[in-house]
Image 1 (cartoon, one colour):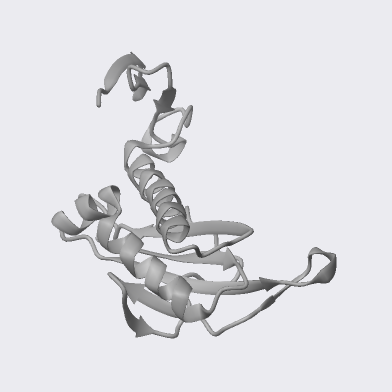
Image 2 (tube, rainbow, N blue to C red; image 1 turned 120 degrees about the horizontal axis):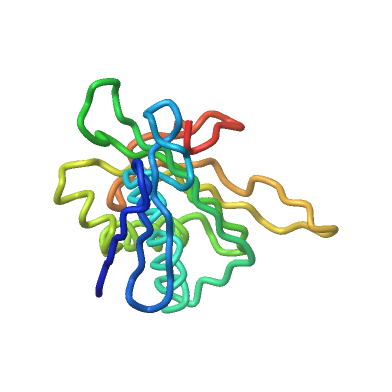
Length: 171
């Protein structure tokens, strides 16, 4: 794995991975940036969301857990004045015919082995993910198939949603 950064002025940097993939990072306007890209800290949370969906897909395939839609929404909590993120909460929403227990097991495995999640764990930043299972209905409508359960490394901790309805993970 490689990472290269080229400063483009102000707080904007063009990053590439040595495989022709690029991303621009910048600070938001309220932090004296130009908002030409996501911030580096936001990129960490985006990476976590991508890792969770990727690893859940791999785990689901190995467990023969079929799904038709998968979405992750995360919110990183960084109190004012704190140097970095102190906690991440979110939801993993799956449309599947599988039982809630199967989804929870797959999510628990995912949270334990997701490489980006492991980095958060080693940095002592807890990641809590709410599993929500939705069953497909005729006409592409969905209904909540089960009550949500919050998992931390596979262990249920609460039945309260991590994000309020309609909340955006960026805040």
